[in-house]
Image (cartoon, rainbow, N blue to C red):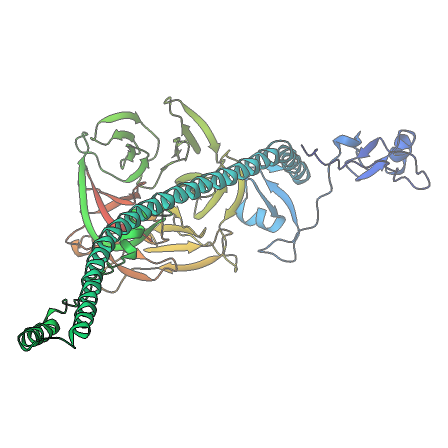
Length: 550
């Protein structure tokens, strides 16, 4: 196994002028290496500072200079504890007034240490694990080679079997030809003997005539003349040999190949758009339940939240399996399911994201400081968690890893303006784009994984209004949007289907097909579309994608 790289220096010189001794210590205040003999000298030279001298292994790295994206002339120099953001002083005064401050250098080094620990973990655990996977893959390759070798042997055996069948047929045909040949040859020999006997008869007749010519009487001559005349009529019948006929049978290559066997490689499924059809509907056994959000839990359960923030887990028959009250007081996509089957949900009364495990235990997972959490989404592609939050008039999306560690914020556009007026539902597309619905702005907003604005969608001209709520994406990268939650016009109730670039494709569910006030939306592991509304406790399932072999 490869060893973890040793990044330590073999000899670390003291930074004190004209020293050059081995440095065992480090001043975190001045970011200088110090040997044991120069510690006192270092304090005396810079008496106006409180020096934080630590063993060299515990040193803090100096923060590289970084300009603020919103204020390019200012350096990022403070850390907002409440928002967990590094910002410049101008940003702190403008957007973080009253928030707690943390030492940026300490935070930087803490994160740096975490990264170093993760890198070490990658060397110790992930890379060996990946190399084990390489060995497994190689073994799979050898297994495939052996299996194909077996197929070759099977085909050779079948070819030998077919050849044996052909040889047997050939032998049978040759035997029949031998019988026919013997029969015809016997007939020919009989004809040959008859002809040879006729020749002997004629020769004897000529010999008798010549021997009797000198003394033959008139009566004998007349009789002999008749015999000679009749001799020409005694010629044996000359018949052609009765030869057999041979007709080639039709050689059907397909039939022979069928007898030989087939070689096939299982083709992957190809998923394509098809006409929408209603598959089934599930009436939930909870009277008056309003469906504000759905999360499918494979293979046969699903979570529902109502408009008062109560979470329910149901089986496929609509029976309640678990109930969780939260502090959420308005309709949003407040829950999501991870690939491990955990439920994540938000509670804006406690500014906390909770995690519910398979044994029904509920634990605090992420705390959001002064920001109120709302919509949440777990990405099955990369394992990241996208969390929509608001504070006063500000809205942002924060990305976390699957362990709840913050990765980045998405809040400002290139001009320093808020991207979001509101974040009601979140989903992530197959290309990493983040899609959100904003009922207040009456639009769907799409940004890249890094937070760069891509486009907005504000509905289709065929409808009198656009009031988006639930959103989801499918395996082909389509975006599906519920329309009509706040509308009083029933012709707005619909599900819009957009392509990966935000172009309108069709009303997947027209006002005639769509449940009233559609709000909840998700897609299960069989690519069925689940739709729930605010005026019914029934979940409707639709099929609009079809599987076919390539």
